[in-house]
Length: 151
Ligand SMILES: [Zn+2]
Image 1 (cartoon, protein in one colour):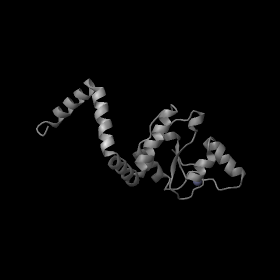
Image 2 (cartoon, protein in one colour; image 1 turned 135 degrees about the vertical axis):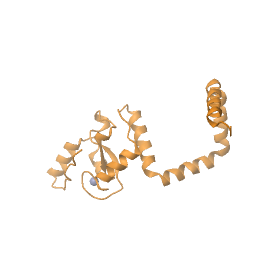
Image 3 (cartoon, protein in one colour; image 1 turned 180 degrees about the horizontal axis):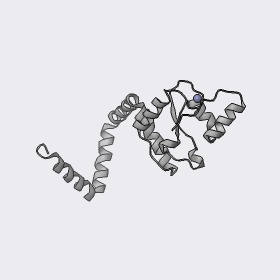
């Protein structure tokens, strides 16, 4: 293993493929024996990498509803930077979440061109409205509407 890591990894991969049930059992046993440690490490990772974990959860949710596209945390962080850390709708600085401009529920994709950084409040309020519908509603209610950025 020390002399040829790639060869050892390939052998382990072959073993796992040839013995899927044994692999599953070993994993289950390992988890049972190290449960608290594994959960603790996962929680620590989530605390220290909030943006990556947010993308993992977002992408999983999108896969579950069959939405097209996958957002990387790098693309998300670039988008947040582009919006200067402020909500795409109300323009307030906030802990932003990825909002699907055309909602997933209405066939929107998870591609970056359909993602808008939103504050949790706007994200909730917008719910299944499109960007235009939500901006129109804010305007009709006399509330501030952030101008759209060129994308
Ligand atoms: Zn907002």
